[in-house]
Length: 212
Image 1 (cartoon, rainbow, N blue to C red):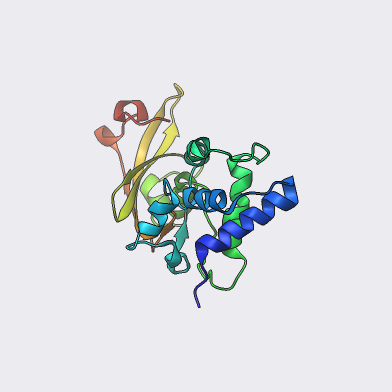
Image 2 (spheres, rainbow, N blue to C red):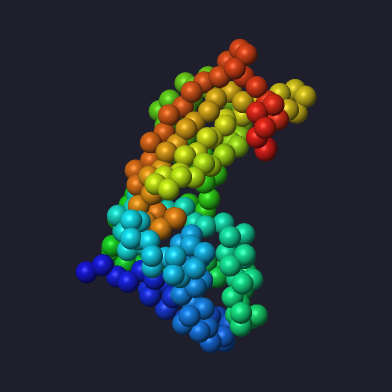
């Protein structure tokens, strides 16, 4: 039987708040916070999502946590939220940690903190990584640009090396497609392609309008 993901996480959050901070978190607040950690602007939004419900999380291969900034914005709008609660990162441990304590999570991937970490992992695990760059003795940095749609997230991961002037030049790009499965954090099997840039195709991040 599939667990009630929202209740599981909300109960964990309330227990964490009580045991660690002596704070009685209202059930309504806990459920609103859980909805935010799942990528929704409200609990009603979470409940209304019938196409990618959070109950599908056990079917996901990839989980990418929501950024703290998104959680912070939601917390500011919740009236009466206890001020004693820790920052969103610490609070998230109680929410996400509850998801990986039982046997229902079977993916080979551990959760990723952000799309940056996911991109680096997938690219460096790809057999074509070294071939795409044709370098092995210089540190490669990543600049990741996500593009969201209703049913997937597409990531452009620009692979860069620093030139003698300190400018980051793009030597290749990985395109990673993540199909949505559960909420806004659970995704199916990723598809990644890597291309090498050379000659005139090799440009700086600045010229591409990408933040370093």
